[in-house]
Image 1 (tube, rainbow, N blue to C red):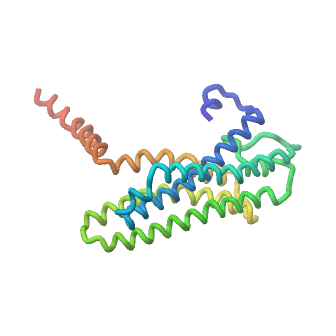
Image 2 (tube, helix red, strand yellow):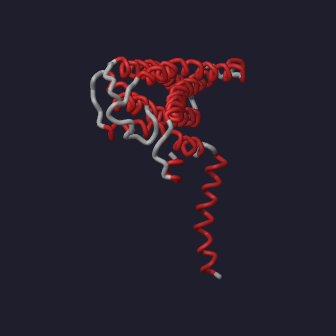
Image 3 (cartoon, rainbow, N blue to C red):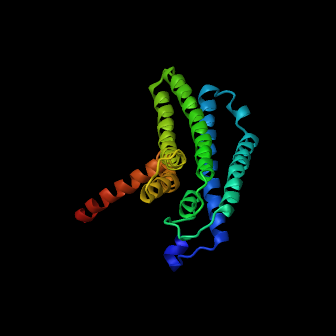
Length: 240
């Protein structure tokens, strides 16, 4: 996207297009699993706080990340095989800002339903499954938080859940809507599909630093100092 903007080079080589497609899909599935691992991490921290150091170690984190990448690569390999079967007799121009599997299927002359059915199956499996685990962990955490006697403890737990849930919903809901509906026969306009995928792909990573930074006391104090300084500087100048 940056290269297109800076150098105005619209054509993308076929090989580079496939690499881009693989990476985008791969990272989306990996991100789905990482959200699930984060939910499990919070579940263990709240439900089993004394066992947390034994259960969540560097080895378990590495194993979770490695497994997420391995599982993600499996369906993406099938996508790459399916893409090579597509034929483009009308046009090879994608009405999209990067190479996207569903867009390539719709532009191609191949009308076999298996190509979009695979997309819906993958989105349902890697979307509904992790989302169910996330919500289950949230329910358990909320139930445990309600038993906490201190109001400060409850506030801390709910703040963590709300910020995580916000990012999760911004990621899952647009992607699941964009990928599942075409596979079950519901046609989306190019603008609607592009908007849903772009929101899920770009907005959560942009919001992550903002959402999680505002939970950091040092960053909060730094922001307060910046604004307080801006308010006091004019007063000092007026007095001088």
